[in-house]
Image 1 (spheres, rainbow, N blue to C red):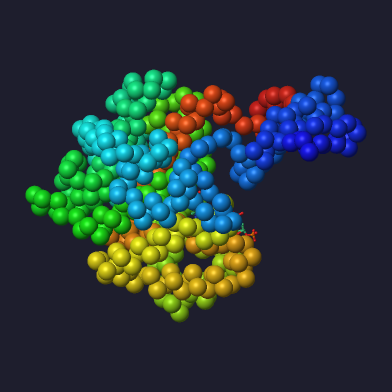
Image 2: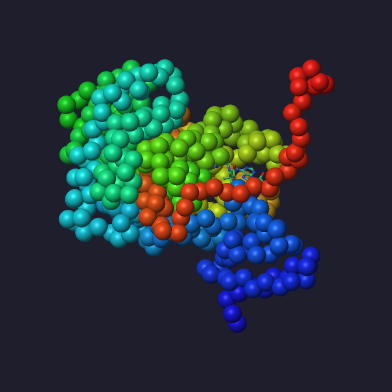
Length: 429
Ligand code: SDX
């Protein structure tokens, strides 16, 4: 049997052989299906890209039905369990192989030596109200970085590209921590190159002026695992934006700022913040049945549940749920955990959710840990962005070095007015 499909156009009776490759057909192959010679030819219509692949990628594999997530072939559970540091997983994502000791050291050094932020970035952060939403400040600071490194525009130079990868990986945690410190009116803590990635971040966030960093190792491990779990997730909304902006050959800071803006949406990375707001709104176990009833009547969504790809339990949510108990041993339990567990139990047994294959996703339990670690709720999505920065950069790099890619410019189905003539003001009704 040939790797083709045969399409019969019943409008003309003509038949067309369309090649099948990687279980897909090329949409442009449909253009030859026409009713008349001056026809544009068939297009596909796929709002929200429910069934459209726009790239070929070697980075992350997801099987949504089986709840499988692998970075460069390595199951996320194994990386969460065994990865000695976030930068080890970040190296794996970017280069495609687990690093040797020497490779990891070089990668770590390159990133650490770029973790200092230009002093003027403080002025950008301080230009915002203390109460400004951290994602608004964080996204703005990311975009501003491009003005400090104009050479980043030369995206075709491999060395310059890597310089920006090191800078973003190094500076994103610093900017995130300084956004928080500004909101609290606290002095900035500078990066400490002796610390691990997660330890350095937590120290810049919460150091209260002690000379020596004193990050609890359980919390450092939890932060490392959370960064690993958030690092990449194939063609999610924000990564699609990173690739689309990158396709116009804009610099990587502009692309990362766009990706962060997309991530801030409550249906995407902003969901971890929405989960805590939802749990606050439910407030007590006695209110759970009524809350679920409202959801089933279409009044709102169970935040932290459901996924475009996973139609099974998000493997990241399983790891995070387990991690929560380790963190609570140090921080004390989060009283909202019982509410979350009750919601999950009901949802997993209720036909409304089962029929729609709605399971906890990465955002359902992560917020409980972040809150227990003293992060403010509106800061949760910034934490998501810190982990995801390596995913955005890796996907961006794959995109701009993919010879098959061009500037992203989808088509449309025009359903507006036909041609009509201008009407002078005094003749308008
Ligand atoms: C992330 O794409 C990624 O990989 C994202 C991410 C990553 O790592 O980058 O995994 C991170 O964004 C996780 C998702 C975080 N968002 C939320 O938790 C918000 C709540 N979830 C939903 O908004 C929703 O599930 C989405 C946005 C995640 C997915 O939406 P889809 O794929 O567009 O599905 P849909 O809205 O078409 O829903 C299908 C049905 C609908 O019911 P019917 O119209 O068929 O009756 O399921 C219902 C929806 O109403 N539904 C929900 C629901 N999610 C979907 N009903 C109640 N609560 C929900 N959470």
